[in-house]
Amino acid sequence: MKLYGVRLLDGRLVWVEPAELQARPGDAVRCHVDAREEDGLVTITPELLLQGPSQSQGELLEILPRATDDACRDLPLAWLPPLGSTVSSPRASGQVIALDPVRGRTTLLTDGGEKLDCDAAELEEQS
Image (tube, one colour):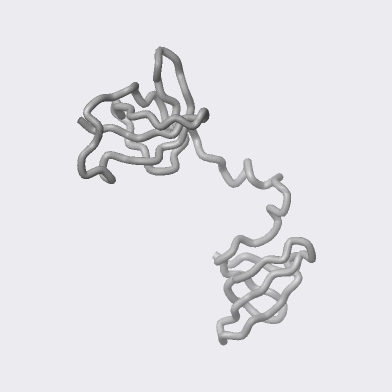
């Protein structure tokens, strides 16, 4: 029997049948457990188990949508470039390796291997 381990919002770990769904670790899901719907996070998928539990405590009903870039745009500091992204400034281009949100600064590792402190507002993300 293929079962998913789901950590419910109240902290319990329950084992649920997947129905026809394919969830991944970290997915927010809704389950039917104890005669009611409960939300939680997938912590264990069937592929991660050598030997799973023998009994299901419920059923996976749906995988909840993940936040989109549009939903995150209004969060504080969302204007900062993501760590690891490749950006260009008037002085150089490189990979973002550090952020200083208090000062609005970023540190780039340039293509030449040099660390460069930049104003985050002057950076443009490269595709």
